[in-house]
Length: 260
Image (cartoon, rainbow, N blue to C red; front, side, top):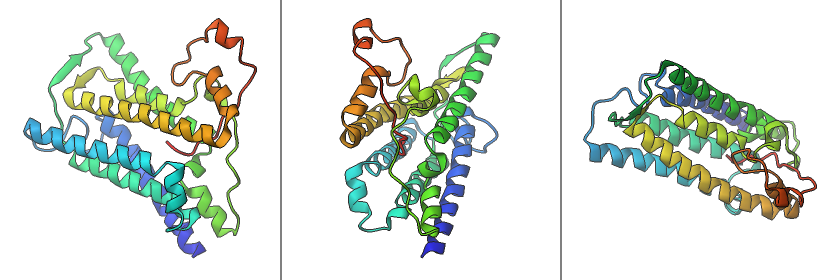
């Protein structure tokens, strides 16, 4: 069982890594054979909307429901606890791969940035967003986030310890730099098509709903410590705090969150 669990976790991580790298090419129209604006026969608008929205909704539902603590308590009665995270990552990656494969580009231009310098800035922001995502995962335990640490510990006959409450690096500026990175990457394009806009709007809505659900779980787990952190640090944009609120804040922590 330990050998199977380890092999399963490693295979899932490799699958996730391939999907993640493909996602960069998909959103940025780079290298991959089929991207958000390129590839596939032109489909009628109604069909394209139906297929694209279906897969966006499937991803959002799976990603949000399976990340909840209540679902995990039930789910781990069915599958071994060390495999719970890997299974979550497997299903999320499979749905995302399905989205890439079945995506119907909608190529009508919504806006185009003609200024060469501005186009370069948007391209730089695109890469900055993806870099922020990747760095944020390592700051909150990358291999635990994607299930690899759990299966390695299980193969050693050990368990992963309780999640630590901390706020490394950018988590001192915003509570969710990982989500912020996704938003920057999804919206930073000099040529916004209708399909890309649909993707960006839908994923933004999913992220905002996901943050609300995740923070409810974090408050349930850490109570006043997380409420204090919310008072001290903005959710996504590092705007300065109001003077009256800042005066109330004396310090906070950050959870090494494992749910995206």
